[in-house]
Length: 450
Image 1: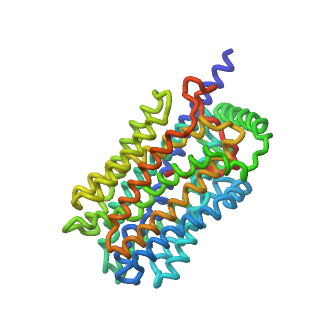
Image 2: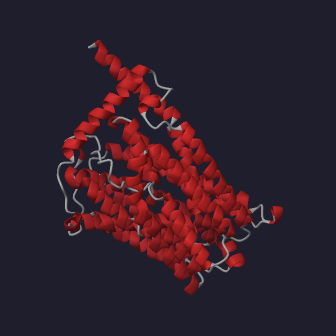
Image 3: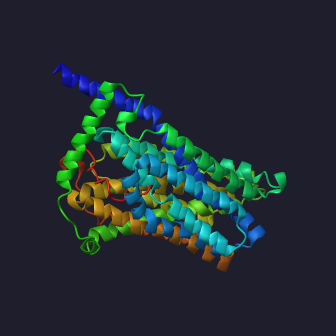
C-alpha cells in the first residue's frame, strides 16, 4: 500500500512541476502565435495607404490563412507523429516567424495573398502539437486543466497583442521603416527566437527531463503508458466519416461552431478598424482599446467554466452565451463609436465563452467511437468561419464603406446558432458514465483554441 501511495504522490509532484515549468513556455508560444496571427488587423489601414490593399483584398488575404491551415493541418499532424512534438513545435514557430517577417516587405496584393497562405501552412498543426505534447506528459485527470489554461491564454494573448501592435506602429519612420514594417518584422523575429529557445527548453521524452526525480519519471511514464494501452483497445472500431456528414447532430454542431468562429475571427481581424471610428483614435490608443473586449472575455470564460461545472446541462449556458454575443453585436452596430466598444466587449464575453461551452456538448453527446472523427469534421468545417468572416467583412466594407452591415449579420448568425442549440442531444452530467472528458485518439485533429 505504501508503494502505491508513493507512486500517487510522485505522479502528483511530477504534474505540478510540469505546470510550473512547461506550461508557461507554452503560453509564451501562444502569445507569439496570437501576435503573428492577428497583426494584420492593426496594419490594415497602413497596408491600404502604402501598398494599395483594399478592404476586400485584405479580407480575402486574412481568410486565406484558414484555407491553408485546413489543408495542411492533417499532414502537419502526421509529421508531428514522425518527428515528435518538440521538434515539430520548433519547426512551426520558426517557419511562421520567417513568413511573418517577410510580410514587412509585401509590395502588392498577390504577394500579400501568397504570404498569408504560407503563414496558414506554416502554423498548421500548432495547437494539435501542443495538445499532443500534453498527452505525452500530463495524466488524463489533469490534462483537461492544462488544456483549459492554454485555451484561456488565447484571450490573454489577444489582449496583449493590441498594445504591443500599437507601440510598434508608433515607430513609423524610425530607421526609415514604416510602422507596419516594424510590426511584422519585430513579431516575426520574436517568433523565430522563441522557437529556437523552445527547442532547448522542452524535453522530447519524460526520461530526458532533468527536472524530474527518477521516481517521478517512473510514476509519470507508467500513468501515460497505462492510458495508451486503454486507447489502443478503444480505437479498434472504424467509422465512415462520409456517413457521419449525414448525421443531423453533427451538421447542427458544425453550424453552431461555424457561427462562433464567425464572431471570433470577425473581431480578431476587424476590431481595430471598428475602434478607429472613435474620434481622435491613434494607432497606439486603438491598440490599447482593442484589448478591452479580450480582457472582459477572460473573466467571462472563468465564470462560465465555474457555472459549467455545476450545471446538469450545458445547453442553457451555451444559449445564453450566444444570445449575449448576438445582443452585444447588434447593439454595437446601432450605437455610437464609443459605446460600440462597450457592446463589443459584451459580445466578446458571449462568443469567447461559447467556444469552450460548445465543446463539452459533442464530448458528452456523441459515442466515444465516433468522437474523434466527429470533432475533426466539426473543427474543419466550423473553422471555415475564419475565412468567411474577414472576407465577408472586406466585401461589405468595400461596397458600403462601413462594417456595420457585417455586425448585423454576425448578430443574426449568433442568434440563429442559439436556436439550433435547442435541437442538440446531450447526456446530462448526472447520467454520464464518468465525469472525465472522453479521451481522443492522439492522431485525430483537435479543436482549435478559439
